[in-house]
Image 1 (cartoon, rainbow, N blue to C red):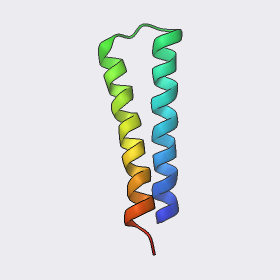
Image 2: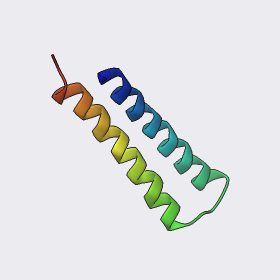
Image 3: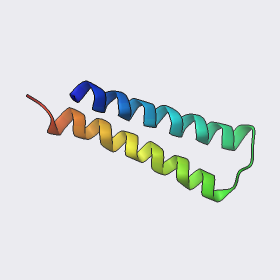
Length: 57
């Protein structure tokens, strides 16, 4: 289960980072897309932190 949570965190980080880069460099989707991808990144960091510190055995 811990590995699935870690994988989900990394996937959120990848999606958020790629989205922010595409929004900045290739497309101009606006402020809403920037905030959305930043929230996805934050959710990925929180997921990784929870899986690292709270799910230790």
